[in-house]
Amino acid sequence: MGITGTGSAGNTVDTEDMAKPSHKDANDGNLTRRTEESGLPRDKGFCITVPCMNSDSSPFLLPDWPAPPWVRALCTTRAGGCSHPPYEGLNLGLHVGDEPADVRANRRALARAMGAEPVFVEQVHGTGVQELHAADAGAECAYRVDATYTSAMGVGCAMMVADCLPVLLAHRSLPLVGAAHAGWRGLAGGVVEHLLDAMRSQAHTHWPECATDALDSGWMAWLGPCIGPESFEVGDEVRQAFLETSPGAVEHFRPGAVEGKWWGDLAGLARQRLRRQGIDAVHGNDSSECWSTTAHPERWYSYRRQNPTGRFAALVWLDAQAWDAAHPQAV
Image (cartoon, rainbow, N blue to C red; front, side):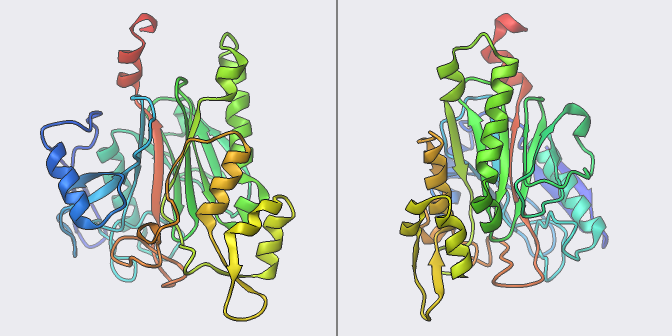
């Protein structure tokens, strides 16, 4: 059964119900085939039908990572939605100049498709972290942070991007998930490390009966689409910001066409920092061209390629039914 929302011009956003937890329903083969045909990265695709302005049946991107069944995650594309040029598609950013009614319609359709309530925050290219609670669900939050985490069921940690890197975190056995917006400033400043520290502290506080090793390990990450190393040209100051805290970051910069310019690998820098924190299970963006926001205008918004433009988002949340099914003794 579809769900609907209405934008400023009366355009209807109608999506297929995506709240079903299983990826292996009767349509799974068709969804996989259509994802491969679309040229999306090799993560699992989830087709949604959005009969709206300039749209057709297109997939969301579902992270292909070994998360437990109660962890749900997806990455939107610009397909579908009510927004008009230059934001055409499923723009989720209220701060970019798009019609607020269109953005809110896009967000409502996304929430219904998820079967959960995404929480969008005001991202400031910093390192602040905020825990989300059930009371935050559905609200337009005033939190000025670049990372969120939650143990509340049905509350989605959402990070909007249009070249910056979205990072999702989950634990293999605990009901605890988080997301970070990692632009170069936030990544160099430690936003991913701050998020992981907050989540590890939460784990030790809420589940003290678990072994310390189990709480400190068992983490996994998924990296979403971002500006690719073929487009991320930066100056000496950006490279130096990474080298000051991580000398090994040098391998993720190559000389540019002129002196003082470098091509940076944002996803590679994130993988390196995650592994320094003991997270070897890093999935998703491998810095190949298919993950590049600048290289695929039909798929992703890109601020560097076009300004103004919209924002897509990576989201992660907890599913109560799946958690209860996996832990019947606690129900």
